[in-house]
Amino acid sequence: MLANVRKDYILKTERLTIRPVSGSDIDHVHQLQTLPEITRFNTADIPQNQQETERILTSWLLSPRNLVFALETSDHQTFVGLIAINLGREKYRNAEIWFKIYQQFWNQGFTTEAVKRIIRFGFEELDLHRIEAGCAVENTGSFRVLEKAGMLREAHTRQLLPLQSGWSDNYGYAILASDKWSE
Image (cartoon, rainbow, N blue to C red; front, side, top):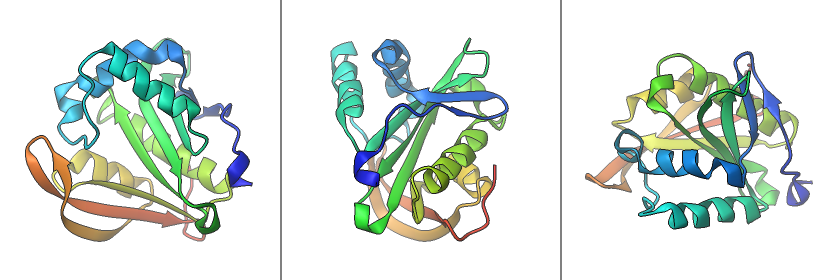
């Protein structure tokens, strides 16, 4: 079941098309990975050039357990950001989600819309039992999105995240298939 996950899903919401990321997204991926407002809470290495971003994008495309999606407006005119669901161990039927959204789309509900849709995808299409997410405690925008999407804060882990500004505490969130969730 999870071991043979297709990577060609195209998901829709009222305002978004959520499609698999592709090589043609390299410029947007590079920009998202290097914008100061995005990298502030990023624990991943920040690519120094387009070639490093290309290696990151290639690893996403080749990994059978990491499903990375591009977010576009429904008319396919505007790239909004990225969202991913990284599958955990098959026996546990769990996954972790993450997202990066261009700042001009913050505070408009796009991220919450995308997170709700990826949660539904995880439970309905991937038959997951549990979906998790984490964020720095200072990242109020992200933890508000997770809460609006129905995820519950389960943990406050001290100095877990190595951010550019130093070690940060982390809030751990999760939602179960048996919880009330909807789009």
